[in-house]
Length: 118
Length: 106
Image (cartoon, rainbow over all chains, first blue to last red; front, side, top):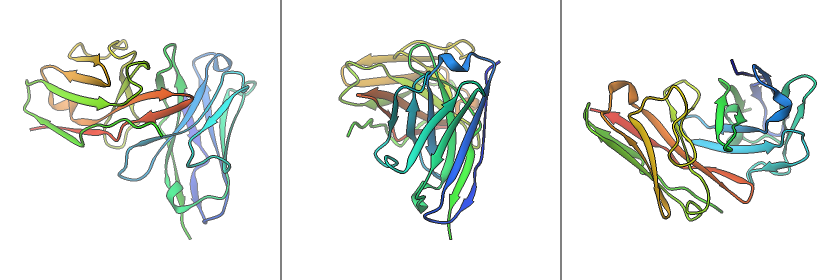
């Protein structure tokens, strides 16, 4: 069965950096695009970034462009999100999600909480 | 920037039909998807390609599309359907979620 397990969240000061990981299993990771989606406390879902199955194309929300970098290591079945210049408004639960056949977000991880606070 | 608009809340009694709408300019040419999220849990896909239901999703969940509006319909609502529901679509390599609708089962 498909499993996505995020890790790397925690408390970081404004201006700091953090790298999130998403370990994938139960499917051929190298064949599917992947997304990061976040949810601030008590708020709705916000798409953050997408990476193609082979890493050749990456897209970002305007709110994180230039600060966050999505990447993947298909040999390790792992997705990453490098987050730099963090702000208080980046505080959220971060989910990784797999892209399905019809471009839907068909499987989600359980999320990892990032708190940006001094 | 591309936006999807949902009502903040919908309330229904058990056994009734709940309809949640989602409006967006790109919806006539892009598929819409719906996700259910219960407190403390990750979202779950309930509708893809406007009206298709993934395996394991009850038949009472259905989707439809008309012009710039898509609709999630839950027939014979049950207490367990109380959750937040999000529509989602994409346009020009930007993926967008609606603001979410809280479904309350009275």
